[in-house]
Image 1 (spheres, one colour):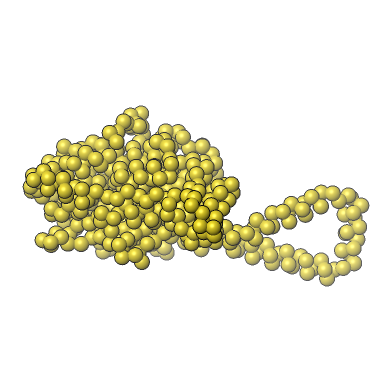
Image 2 (cartoon, helix red, strand yellow):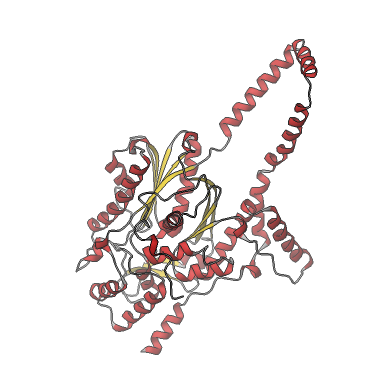
Length: 504
């Protein structure tokens, strides 16, 4: 039995991320340089404006007087110039992209009575699903290697026997997390719910009717013309997708607030079968959610924490293996679960490779871009036996928020991107303290960095998340000030204990 169990674990052992230095493809670089070229006109205008300013500063009072006398006798030129200037200024103001500010955010903190430590998890698994000894041993090994600690939270439905998996219980979990985080957000920002013009909610596996957005609108009595969106089935990277959608809406609707809420629901998604590829999600996912307040009002810049710089989205769904590597389905006895493919790590690595190759020209210093591009061209044109230069993203970002999907993902990104333990500390500690909270994990990580008082004005933050489909999405933020932790920071009561020493 031990041999068979060992064999089963080996089959499910994920492949390592590919070595980026051997597999970066030139065609994906074009995606990133497309963004760079699209801003070329603005870059060309900078020296022109500088030359005009220098020329204007050299004019004497007599020169200015002579110019005025010439204009007095050429009224048509003055009118045409003025009209052109006014028209051009109006077009610029109407078409320029609005800055998107992150005013504040809140993460749900599960109360102590919903705590689910390792011992409780194993007892629940035994009682709830009546797993045999082989399955229990498999769960025990996964938990030991998971990177989760004993302070994670589970929904109320998992704290009663027999477990409640009804629609009412799932709604109770959703309301507990959503209203808990949103109450905190509205209280900390002093923004009234009726002032919010855009609402985006993402939750992959629980989509009731009326929707989760409707539940929030009803609870807070939001206004009737609010633009609401409910995203489902988009996995753990849906939080970045929701931010991107809110950003696009804020470009259209002036002087507006947008709320983005990200969560996952566990109540109806506990897998009670024995398929090992479906049991892993039971071990990793825990209770959590985040609420983010965005604004395009220029007056909110002073009180905001961050400014959104870029969002880069990568979708590999055209590939069949990528499409099915995270797949909800029935097992051979009809029990529904989410299956994780043994190719997951390789597919995630390919998606990340494309995403960072696109992201590079947007954020990397020009010196890194030249080295990166030159080695790729040399390899392409001269078939040189040299490894492509792997850019140092530590020169572009001060903080990394890597989706806390599992210890293996964090380990491989740390290795392949040559990050230091400090760069991945927030991700590891979030996984340890809160578990995999799906799309909201990147916000718990940001909150950790703030709680450690490491966020300084001008710091750049890179949020990276993976999701079913298969997707890799990332967002880049700029700190507008030395960010202090909010009074509602989820790490407030325990930050002095972290970082904890992990058995890696």
